[in-house]
Length: 575
Image (cartoon, rainbow, N blue to C red; front, side):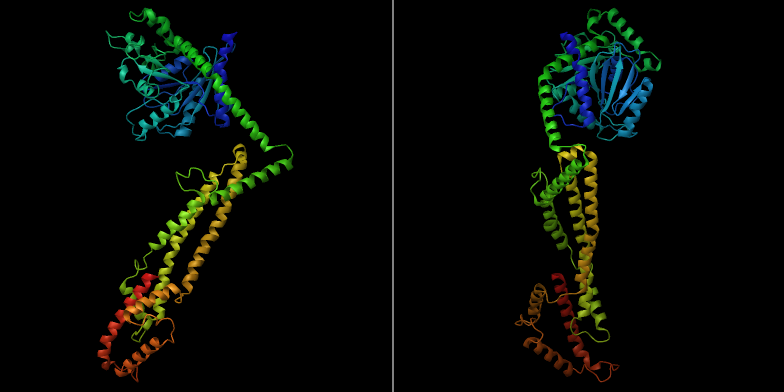
């Protein structure tokens, strides 16, 4: 009876794997399982098909297992037929194992694409047969060193990381498949197993291609643990070669040939009872049952805690069939969502603060660092040369020689530069919009984790609200630039302070002369200019007459023009 109870452990753990996979519930513990690792040419697929007793895995010359395949073998002693079920296709049974292989290939292409890329997304298979022992194992992509033409350049590292992810947990039994006709010390499977299990406590070695070893050599020292000691030992196998598969040799025939090989072998006959696929299946079953038995108290404790947590969450939801209760729940969820969004903005609900800026702190950084720097980097003279300034002054003067900087020229040139502030301002709006969108996906409400459709609807509504605000915000920024462009406020205190400084350099001792047009210094300069004009006979009775007598004034006037141009340029840089 005790043995019968132990036999129920493997289906129980398999059921837990399936439940956690289906529900996407995070279980803070790795369940016991057997994980197969090996190089691409180690014979890993042949071993797995021999364990199952059927051809069901994709075959090829390059990498064919491109996703972790979680396989649950269920012994059905009274069943007349064998069949395959896929967790991603509930309710469907595949009695044709060729169709099952095609489904593996199709689902792999769906996730990984048609090239030789790999994915960590697991595919779950359950095989029901009277010819198997209850077992759960995971087949991983074969370890490789050189990427093919249609593989990413980092394929070796990606497969290695994937294998380490599965064999790292202490609850994993590592089934290291190694070809016996190669140096065992350099076997890829043992190398990666050593990284997480250096003492060999939970690694089972599987020696393939025993029959292909060089004449005069054997694997007895390896099997006896004298070369590479493993606590779970080594199991030698003789599986079908690629030629056997192409010749149509069945797995049943291959198992008979394997049994005959070990019984008649000069070297291995004494070990025949502990060799072959049948012994391997029994060994794996015993190992995983012992492992589950050891882990069972902790598993029970974790599941009890998880169950209590979920029941508490369910009670908090207080979901009933009445529509009024459902509306109350939805309103509570929306209120919590809005509160958490506000807390993100105010900096009260930010996780991982040591890693990156989030929420309100990120918005502050955008406004006061990114945007300020972008505005300061707008140089008004990047697209404005000295010739542009002089040309604008002369165009604004028309027929008359320019005495001072025409206000029209100043406004034309200033407006041209003001428009350049629009682009960095719109970029600031976009960055704020993206950060607010990110907050939407950062919000975690327990009720929304349970009701995925409600989560999607709330997120969609929130994103649409942000989008509805995004367009008018952009328009408001454009309007602000247009407002600044429409009226140049030369009475701005900062601007007037700068112009004072510029005029003080041109007219020393008159730093306060720009405060009032009626000020005495301003009035005195105007009188001096009028007197200078009269003295040099610039004003003529007929505009068509040549300004012959203005040669001296012309030379002086050119210096004044240059000085005023320089004055304007300084003012432009300040703005």
